[in-house]
Image (cartoon, rainbow, N blue to C red):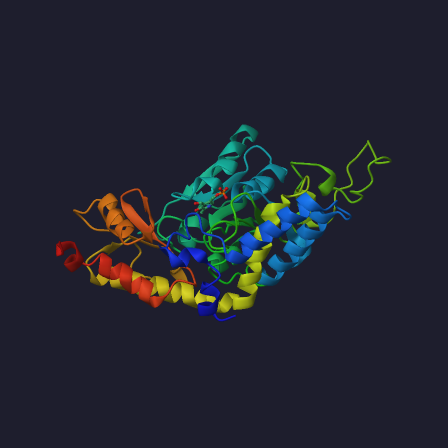
Length: 384
Ligand SMILES: Cc1ncc(COP(=O)(O)O)c(C=O)c1O
């Protein structure tokens, strides 16, 4: 599907210039219709098959196509933190082990690791240099007791894209797990899990994947999967899940696929919406989506730079360091004022700390980006 054609699927575009996909995104018309159809089915018909299991498998298949991985290596979760916590809680830690993260990460990728302190695990944070989380700063904290390096693919505050290739290759050499919070990249940037040197990746659906809050996924490398002991256990986690009577009571025979990390059926309504959202990405194509996201974000950043705004660093940045997030500020203009000007023109962004963050998606247009730049131009401020 052509991205311009796909724009019509997002009713929000008729009322707003929506550029807060790094926050909470709108859903498509198709996702709404899928939820309604599912609700209709649930209210009018008796279930004749294990519908939730079928829908979960269908969603896993779609995610696997989008991220070039095996459907058996995907678990459905409720949130990014849920996915990360399953890994954090499921490894066999020894007191004295450590996890290396980065300062300034979104807390969903910090608290699950800090919470391991009670098991004697240390959480270390790499500093960023001018907004860059570099392989050097991360790897210099890795030592013989490091079990996991836990990083966002894209930093939520400045949109810096971390070099997962270099960090992952090095982690592989040292036998360290690379776990990635991908909520700020999945759906915006192409994620080819058949070749990224990543061991575990988690994301919620409600940002760049344009799904609802309350559902997400975790992908686990097949070599790592058997090493994670499910922290939450129920019928979904086991091999013989439909055996309600003659089950063993002296052991749990965990499912060998990533479904072992699911304890029960995920929400049918959330799965309906998420699956419909993922299908749009498959139809438009992840390469097309990525190209548009990066082009629009660059056009926005360059335009703001020309208008005298300070793009939050590093700026300018290399192609491999870019994402869909553009954060900026202007000395002397409180971010609340900037946001007010944007809101007056029905442009949706958000404030973090002392800056404004905008995050266009593939269905935004060059005209919308230019409109944002016009609204924030010094000339616009002079107009009565
Ligand atoms: C990098 C990052 N991770 C995670 C989240 C959200 O976490 P969760 O899905 O657990 O609510 C956000 C939301 O802003 C984020 O920016």
